[in-house]
Length: 118
Image 1 (tube, rainbow, N blue to C red):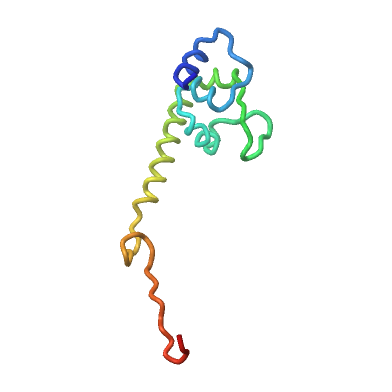
Image 2: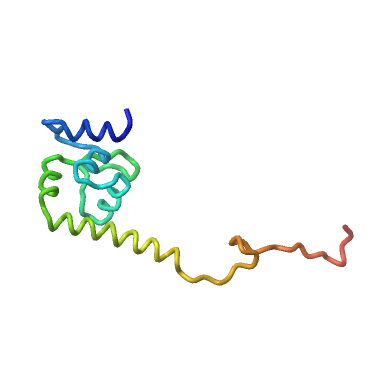
């Protein structure tokens, strides 16, 4: 199954499980999967329990249903994602000193020591 058909099947379920993983949460709320960690970092989404930093995270469907209907929360979430990408793109555009050889690395030329033999 590809992602689109999985998403369509998930969204057609009449009874949704009590907890959803990050992919299902993104589908349920109408966001992209890569935006879920941004919402967590902005404290707009809270995973269930106390998951480790790199562990799989689950979210309560009941809470997601409330957030899904909250227009103010959706606006804050959209703004948080926009602010994240604005800040990230601004970091790329910062003016840095010119590079010596054009590919971001300074060229090192070995110096010859006139005293020691080759």
